[in-house]
Image 1: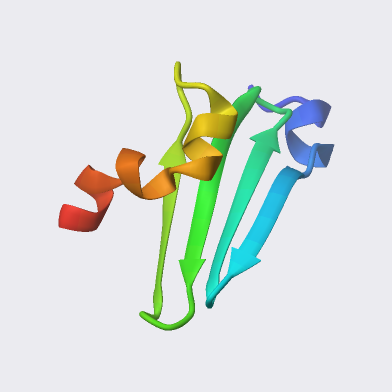
Image 2: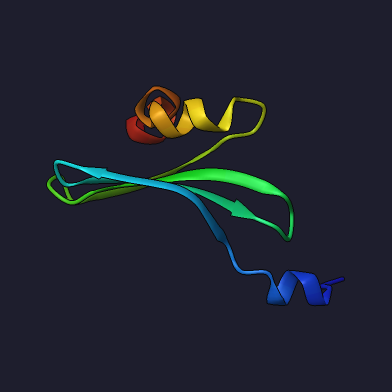
Length: 74
C-alpha cells in the first residue's frame, strides 16, 4: 500500500560536487530511507546511480567509480 509519505517525500540532496564536467550528488529518499549517488559525466555523455547499501555514504560519494564497476561494465 502507498502511504502519504511515499507520495509527498521528495528526494533530498545531501552533498554535491562538480569538477571537469563530472557532477556527483549524494541523495536520500526519505520514503524508504535509501541513500544513493548519482554521477553525471557531461563530457562522456553518461549517467549512472550507485546504491550505498551497507557502505559508508561519504566514501561512495567520494569514490563512486570504485563502487560502479558493475554498472559501467554493463
